[in-house]
Length: 301
Image (cartoon, rainbow, N blue to C red; front, side):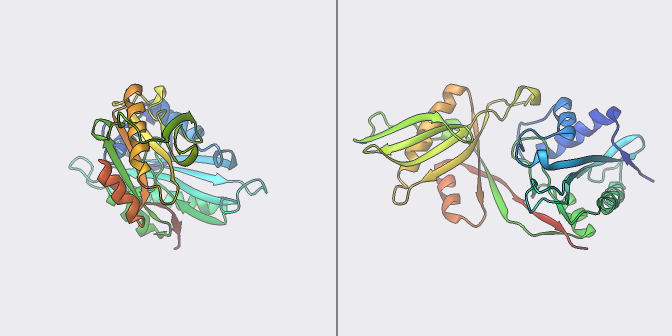
């Protein structure tokens, strides 16, 4: 029978292999280092708002024949007034992964179900007000339950988790396929580069009036992640003033030009599955759909 137990530091290489197998099914050419995985079990610096609210963290693994075939990371949020209301005294299955059945390990689904039972038992011991789940691995663009993980979704649903949130579409574009800035911009139109909220901001001005901006985050392939393809960026923020949709092409062209200078060759973007206008805009501009991910899972036994 598989053994479910707390994570040990000696598991770090096998756990990282399992994490990277799931990352690779979502986004091409990206993998994370052992150091990144270990660091993410202690804190999540990218989540600078919610991470300070975490009061307890537990990582569990399921071992079969001395090999880690499943793992999960759980968070308990504090009950203090400083914790956001929706997080206050809540427990979260931050991520849950397991190796689909193989000839060597044909019973990994049994191991996954045992691990899930242990996770629910831990949430019960914490006596939390609500039980949530996600799939937020320590890699760019891996969150929710992506479509390439049907084996994970099956375990969640068998355990009583239900999808209560929205669905997001993940896009990827080759920067070389994105438009180039026009050599002669329209009269009265200029683009200015500044520091933005989520990255480098490029703002379009028409007759000295801001009509929209785009932000690109080029810090995704951090050195500690040792990404196989370091030239990855994120379209992290976009705003277009009403009746100025034509300036989307202008902003994207200038963003792509800046990314080329940065040595970035791929750009990620995200949109709600319900926003067909935004989806068409990305597809027309040269993006392709990578996958869809179901965000927001709640335990309802």
